Image 1 (cartoon, rainbow, N blue to C red):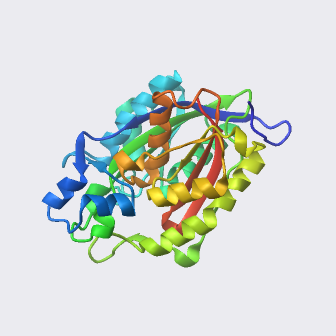
Image 2 (image 1 turned 180 degrees about the horizontal axis):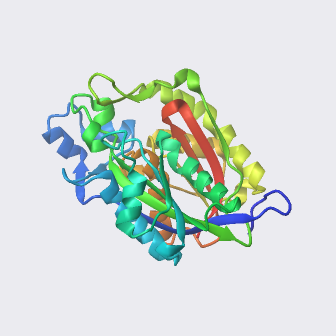
Length: 321
């Protein structure tokens, strides 16, 4: 299969994927033991999470990014000398400066690439994926390493059960390069800036906060048409979508969107059950794990849908590597 692009246009695709989850498994019962006022059944019924992963105290965003990126590079067959640009989608670096991308590139032995971070929260991976594709299509890079890595365990208020039960740490990565046929369909993106502060880091406490009900209503009410438009622009019928990989925000949101979009043959990513919400990392993490398990065949069309802080969103059909 190939995806629709403008006639005569060059094309790009994902050449390889990789992911990393920290070794610390935090169950709902572990949260209760830490003093969180909740119970296992409440968490599962509200957000669908049974467990999440938290990084070690000395494990950083860049540490996790390096693990995922190394796997993506190995899977792609692209040498570090062939990478001209490194992008890191993250909103959880401990300080605004320096960016993660130059540090990551240096660790991987990628010499003097372009390197910058993308901060678009939960839709950050899809935004970075399209920045990577544009760089290849315009001849600014031969191949691009795209990594999404988040470490939310350092930003949690353990007295706020509406947020500390949700978030986890992880990284996912992809290598984007040129292709004879289109493997990345047209992106459909945008934002609802009137609600920009419904998901945020509190300026005084420096803890993560969100208006959960407002985000739930916005996501379930607004995102299905965006996903449908991405399929239309890619020229892919809903029955041909092999997998649906939305941002892993909440299991109820995921299931509601899958029903409203209506993809009869698609496997739906529900990585949130064992990984929690890892913001920008959720989509590449879930996609990489599904490919690794053999649930998605090479070349199969996959619908990606990122949405969250900002409120920014981005949807796109891609072909599995």
